[in-house]
Image (cartoon, rainbow, N blue to C red; front, side, top):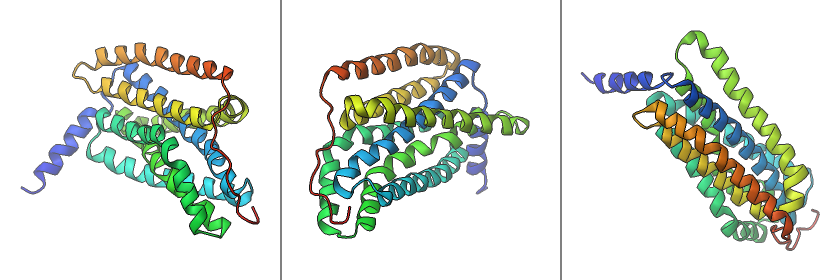
Length: 261
């Protein structure tokens, strides 16, 4: 008798997973690309947040890379566990939106956190690592939950598990490449750290709202609406970014650097 609720939950998750219309699956793959781009774009931005306080040396980059890897590790485990319990586009949408809302709020408190750490810790290695964890661990963990959760939603049979897993991680990694190069080569030199952070959060929230559309009872209609929405939303975001080219960059203001940075 005690196993009945668990079996019911598992059966509902199985019924949800892999039952998407092709257009809905395409949206899930597309959001995997976008979330991958957001994660790596934010990692590049992390250097801009930390550099004025801890320098741009190897310790800062080691802290940033380690924090992102830790967050992705936690996110992968949590995403897989949560997906097995409730394979729902709504839950996936909430995880994306939580991480994205954090990005929207980050410029309002990042400087206070960094100054607090700088004042309390003299060691540049410990200070850069703690600052990186404080700023980046939370949102990247939630965004890192996407890939294993998306695989669970898309998987319709064990025979397709390899192709689905490879496609999700491959598309996400392709997005990470675009996010890395686009942020460092184009966005940071032109519009600055604060503006990029806000737009990453806004795009992430838009993706979360699109995923919510997939949880509607009529999946085909929801997927069609999502497909129609995602293109203009991303286009509007890119247009707004181009509009910022005429304005001075909004970056984290430099403060006192620690000795030895």
